[in-house]
Length: 370
Image 1 (tube, rainbow, N blue to C red):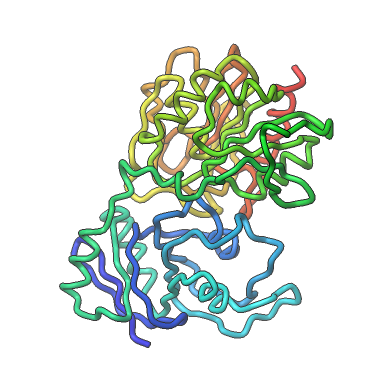
Image 2: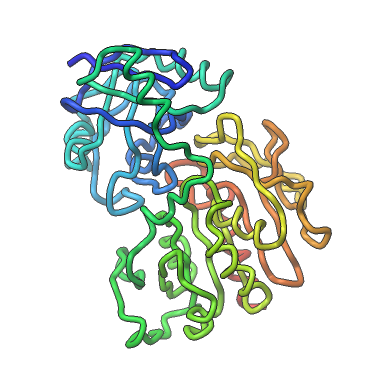
């Protein structure tokens, strides 16, 4: 089935649908990971985006129910060079095409993904539309231009949990806060869900944490009532600046207990400390981003997925810069010794990606113990 991708700047790419008829819009971005498409599809940080994979052959190991990073597919669309319809993997439970169809997410193949990626790198990430219905380039370009912009939108409200949940037996279980009591299974951690990935929760649980996941709009007074040992700020999609309610909650929590933020959580922590953020030209997305640890001098290869960044020149003087991106020199990590707050822009939990930075979860535990 013929399909068309149209970008807001007037560029078009022809391809084929491998999931049936569809039409959707979103910000078109690319990911450079060679594996891990299942984790990428289910990462809530991709809400509102159409993801292009730079690795050409996708689908060859299928889909399984153990490696998901949230309860559903989060992307608006999936663009690949060549779909592999016959997976070869003993863990596979269904094909990629069937998985996308299950959640009504369009998949398009046959696109020159190298040319598309190069275009985004030169011109920047931009709004796009893909369709099997509307194959008129001018019409679809106009739909892309009229679609909502990522900047200035609160996408977190679409991916955060609706009710508090406890992480237990490898899954989130809804709880009533009025009846909730800590079970004493370890360090009490409240995780604010801006679009949290399951492997973050697995990583915290592995280090002896009992985790209560709360919606993004949870206020500081509620967190105080729960009396946690520490606060975790999760990853999530889009622009951090509109999340004024979360920034206010974090600001009130500073200094009360140790805080650890990842990705969007890092940006929100920095905003709460008084810094500013900006939109990157095409973002950092993939499992091969080099980051320098300024404290050790070591270089870590990291997994990343973000389109916004903290302006390090706006950070208060008492905030220590701990990590920088070696590709473009942007901020990747901070530490506030007095407030016991640390955060990183990248994903130490990987999934998909390298495990070079998993030590950061251990640092969080050390802050709790201290």
